[in-house]
Image (cartoon, rainbow, N blue to C red; front, side, top):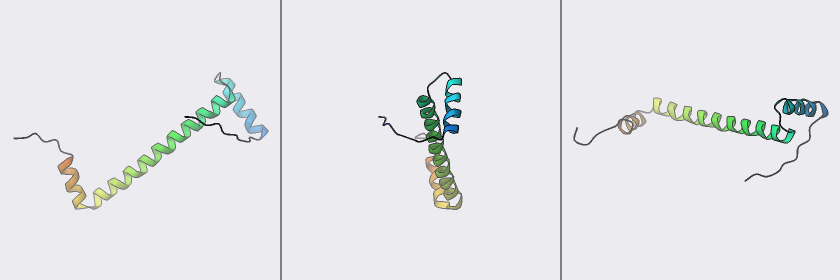
Length: 80
């Protein structure tokens, strides 16, 4: 679900964004929406990478975590 927002842009910024939107063949609102969506996606990806790094560091520094990953991360077949 989307929700409208209102933002103020100074004239120079607005003119720049309008020109870029026109170059892409879209309106200003659509262009700003795409910019915001792309930025939000990058923020999410950055957070995931940061959280993954924290987990990896914990595993590197903790023998019990290493054993857990080794056991659960290794495919096993019953009877072999």
